[in-house]
Image (cartoon, rainbow, N blue to C red):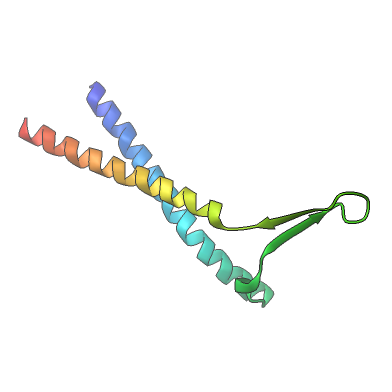
Length: 97
């Protein structure tokens, strides 16, 4: 009984991780297409730059990059693959017993 419950939890978590991976990978490209269609601008050349405190003190310049967003799909893809491997190994182990 306890083994079935843990397998169901692992199946649900694996499916959730797979959905998060799918959405995070394809949302970036789909959002670029949506923005380029809606605003008629080339999104490839866009970058995020923020300037704070230009005239009244020390100036801070923040430059946004995309490198941190790539970790989310990588981590959830690894979790998805680990869940699939565990479920396949568990099914084979139960089949032999």
